[in-house]
Image (cartoon, rainbow, N blue to C red; front, top):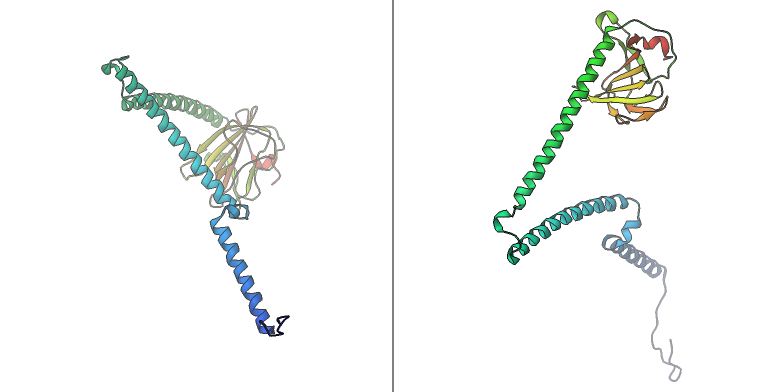
Length: 258
């Protein structure tokens, strides 16, 4: 560039391929660094995939912490109210219950409620076991009734009433769905000794029993339709299927197309 009056050179610059590449490279690196800083140190990262899950987890943790702080705040307010009333002479000091005593009373009430719930559960369990024993006393086959196939797999053990084996054992793959043979209600979900579950589906007088279920998808009391998923196999235990109709044993191989 020249001065208009003296025609002397003020400054100059030279453009070359290497210089252009260097400028472009430095610009790109600067943009990458700036974008990285924005993502790491600003809330902009929350709109990117992969960060939303951690944000939700953090929100849940903060919400639980806020609930805990609110509970502590309520206790502190109750304590300060009692102190204020004592200082004002509204109540006698001997009549004030400490927070520890109040918490003990609450724990005793909760324990009493849990004991009542436990007794009710045990009574229901004993009644159900008696009903199941009554079912086992009648092992005569009944009329044929076509049902929905409960699980895909290979039957490795058939019914053996003489050995008190009233169901078929099906070998299946991991995460295979266990389906409802009929529409009905899930009347029982119990954990077995091998950490699997036993599930009972009832449709009137018709009962389907699933044993060694790896994962239960329907809770006790749920209403289901025929073919609806009840649980999943864990792949380590074979599934046992029993059918009962009005207290009489039914061979699953006779009423289900495997």
